[in-house]
Image (tube, rainbow, N blue to C red; front, side, top):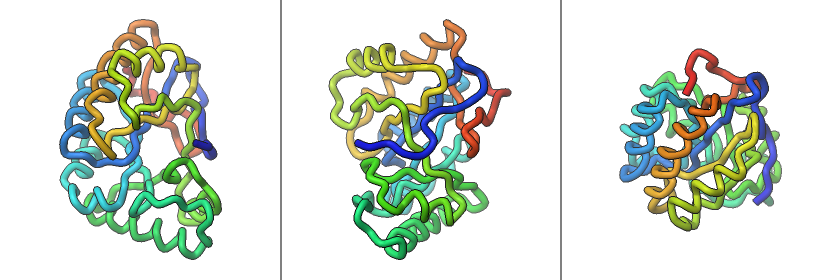
Length: 209
């Protein structure tokens, strides 16, 4: 998996940005929202357009909870060899689905499926979305067990890191459980979890973990 776009946040050197791909997922996204709420953390949810159309009520819940939204394409296709025109049509379709589900919500981010960017980053930028990459991916798309996910997070988290996780695309209960363990563990050491601003800065310093 390649990673482009914003991969770190600036500001407090003990801030981490959690991002979640492939939702919304009716089984695990609500549980994840509860975990984030209980720990006072905000995150970015990069939404798969087909899933948005199936579960618009969960998108509205994400927005109500104060999280940010990202466009993760309509059908989660590999865009690396697509023409700009084809990419643009797909992103506009996904954007329309998100805005229909949550009228008035902003969609400041775009993340390419599989991290295969091709021309998609420049097209997204032309539509007003910042490409959102990552510094750390822990392989939760192939769940290895909650304890292993926690270990990978413990060993891989670095100051300012954007972390890619998944709340959709399969059973993500291990990811939810790992997030529930890692946020309080790091918060006890003075770390906090928040969303990046479009310029890469920390967006919400008033929301400590």
